[in-house]
Amino acid sequence: MANVLGAKIKELRKEKALTLEQLAEKIGSGKSYIWEIENKGVKRPSAEKLAAIAKALDVTTDYLIDDTQTEVSDDLEKEVFYRKLGQLDKGDQDRIMDMIDAWSKK
Image (cartoon, rainbow, N blue to C red; front, side, top):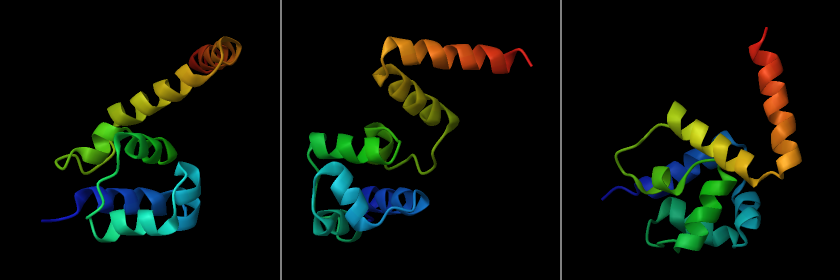
């Protein structure tokens, strides 16, 4: 059986130009942990680790675990954007909305 989760993580990590060490540091794990997920498929990350990996790679956990979804869709990119926007404080959210409003009036 193919290791779809590992392949997705590896592809996304490389697209973001992250080394194994850099991704591991972002999620609070070791390099060998990421390597095993990517290459062996034996490790099943906990929900907490999976969420951390998804956040570090700017995708959703649903995308990572869905074996049928092989490309990052526009909807997924929007979902990640909204998640990031929601994590900002109200003042930063308002400034971003002001910028969007200004750009959309061109």
